[in-house]
Image (cartoon, rainbow, N blue to C red; front, side, top):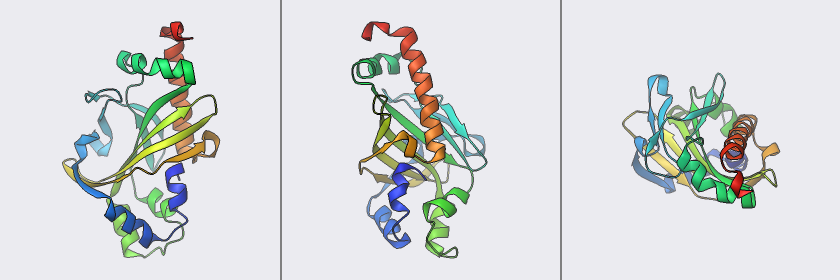
Length: 200
C-alpha cells in the first residue's frame, strides 16, 4: 500500500469509513481527471495550470495503473526548475487507476473481515486516487500533502479529501508507488538537465 495507506491499514475499517465520510465533499470527477475507455485517465489537470493535459503513464500491472501530469511541458519545467536546482525538490501528482477491487480488498483493509459489507461496498466504489507530494531528490524521500479518493463513473462521483501530511523515504513506499516515483525522477532529471543548466 502507499505511504498514505500504510497508516490506514493498521486501524479498523469502521474508523477509516468514518474518517472518509466526515471529509466527503460532493465533486465532479472531471475536476481531477477525465476517464476514457476502460476507465483509464485520458486527461488530467496540469500541475502548474488549470489546463487539461495528456498524462504520462509511470506504472501498470494487472490491478492498477499510475499516471502523472505532463512533467515534460515547458510550463512545468519553468516553474519547477528553481526549486529543483536550488533545493532538489519538485511537486509531483500521481493519478492511480484501480482496474479491479483486488488492491483495495487485499491491501487497504488487510485486517477486515472478507465479508464485511462496508469493506466490499467501498472497494467496489473506489476507482481512482490522486496523491500530491513533494519529491526531495537530496534526501531521497517524499512529503505527501494531499490524497483524494474518487469513485466510479465518468460524470459525477463522490470524493474524499485527506490533507494529512506524511513523509517517507522513497525506498519504503509500496512497490507500485516506488516504481512510479523513480520513473518520474528519471524523466524530471533528464528534462531539467537538458534544458535548464543555468539553474545549476
